[in-house]
Amino acid sequence: MIFFILLFVPVGNMVEKTSLRTTAIISSGLTTLGNGLKLFATSPDMFYVALIAQIICAIAEIFMLITPSKVASVWFGAEEVSTACAIGVLGSQMGTALGLVVPTLIVNESDDNSKIEKGLSEMFTYNAVASTTIFVSVLLFFRSKPPSPPSQSQVCLLMKPEDENIMTYWSATKEFMRNKDFLLVLFSMGIGVGFWTASGMIINQIYVHFFPTESIAVLGILTAVSCVAGGSLGTMFFGYILDVTHKFRLVTFSVLLLNTITFTIQAYYFLTSNFIGVIISVPINGFFNGSLMVISFEYAIETTYPIPEAFGASMLNVVIYIFAIIYVVGLNIVFETAGFLVGHIIMGISLLAATLSVLLISPELRRRNANLMSPSNIK
Image 1: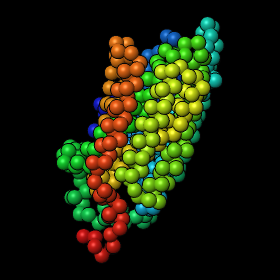
Image 2 (image 1 turned 180 degrees about the vertical axis):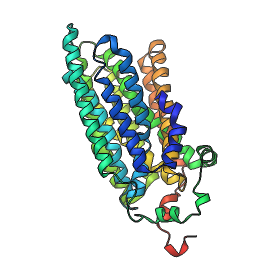
Image 3 (image 1 turned 135 degrees about the vertical axis):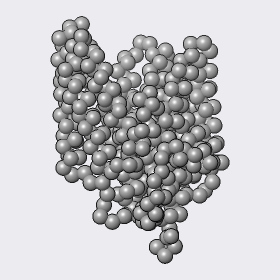
Image 4 (image 1 turned 120 degrees about the horizontal axis):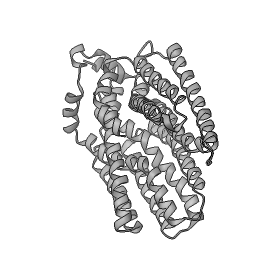
């Protein structure tokens, strides 16, 4: 989170000034380098190597996080762009789910350091092989753009004078500050997706407090199931719904409302220490909460077109991470000073505020309007 907030401006500018292929090569190349370095960081005295490797991977992730919406816009038509973006987000969500489960299966808890080192070595090897395979695939097969633009909105961008296509991040930010709809998207999705981003850390503290005798492994499985529910099922479903209906405000409001309702049910089961209720409600809430990621990316692009996608996506991610940090730090303080009931009330009120703010967004969809233009109307 910290590295994204620090580096999103130069990375966003780099993504827009270079090709998608260059962006993909940099991202996958840095990931491969970072995972390769981790092979030398299995022993305790090499912790600094692991830290350097993780920093490299964190920088690579910045490129990865702001490109799904751009890849979808450049490569896919108006009736499939949200589904394509959902597939891009799906990879990130599934990676999170695997990251919650796989390490616990490979690296077993032990008092024997040699066994832990062996487990770490095995896990790092798998990561290095996977990232190297992806890097080579990008070098061989990934192209920056299709032979012809897939949508009218892309045609409009290509037909603009070259000097109008040159935009810095700071000039884009000035446009963002004058765009009420985008600011409302930042607020509503910053809270919604920020809560999803922070929930992995928050729910651990809540779970241990209310179920101190239950295995922590159950929580890992629950969180992974939530990622799968939201990351694969929910993301693909709502991405498809957006492509079919283009009802961004209605879909966003509905998902945020259902997210608030299912969170309230989940909170009730936690506060009453109902273990079965928690097991059922956490994945259901994850279905709606995890789905907000693709909706947020697509809504941001719809409200900021024709500003480059990387600028809007990176600004959205920064706001999401800021809200996530506020959630984690703020709720830890609230839990310790005022209790878990007050903390859950604060979370519920914030999610409700995000839901209601969507009603203030205008129905205008800039990218959609561009796609509906006839070629004769393009200037």
